[in-house]
Amino acid sequence: MVVGELDGDTLAPFPDPSSLQEAEALTTLTRAGSRWTLFSEGVRVGTLIVDTATVEQDFCPSKLSVSGMVELVPTANGLERLLALPESTNRTLAYEPYREINHVYDQRVATLSMASAAIPRVGAAFPPNGLLAARQDVQAFEMAGSPGTTIAATFMYEDELAIAPPGQDAYSLFLVGTQDGELYQEAFIWYRPVEDAGKGAPRYFNHLDWDNDGQAEILLDVFGSESRWFAALAKRNGEWIRTYQDACGPEQFSGS
Image 1 (tube, rainbow, N blue to C red):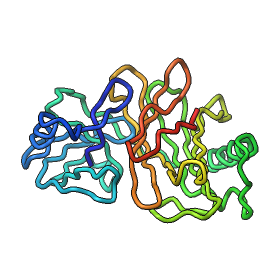
Image 2 (tube, rainbow, N blue to C red):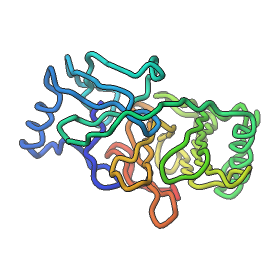
Image 3 (cartoon, rainbow, N blue to C red):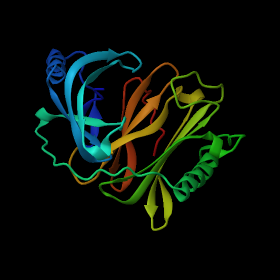
């Protein structure tokens, strides 16, 4: 999936619909035989050799998806969430050991504690069946520039983490927590009530230090009622902020 163009620690829409030059560049990048370097959890894990490119209508705006022969290091076999950069960008990164990190009990409890503190702060209704039932995604990962393990979780109220119509009073709450000794501290939240901005439920997709400054950026997968799109987070001046959201996600930044 062609998400966008790297622009420092954020992303820019690509291609620009009004730019013939960018449209031609995209055609070149995704033609049969072109090569893309694959990453997961911040490290290089393989190569994609493009065979075909098709338009995915589930995304808004629609995006070009590429498929082909995938070569992965043995420890990354079976991965489904991968990031890719064209080899033509000349970013020659060496392979590094890949290690999948599975969340553990203390981390899962930490996401519940952070959500419990955030919900009254943002003025949201507390899930009647409890936070454990409302939590629909939780991830743990280690990334450049952030000591220890980072956790991310998505909580849904009267809704599901998928392309689907939300309930009348639905909301999503996405949070990131960073490790401080044996504890976790809230580093970022994105609260989105449907009544204010429509459905836009984010989940952690992957991370990569794509601007090579020693601090990884985070890519989010965002689900709406009829389509999905992408958003990005970056750490600036010690704070995590949302730096990008596809045009179909209303430009109403409620994250911090």
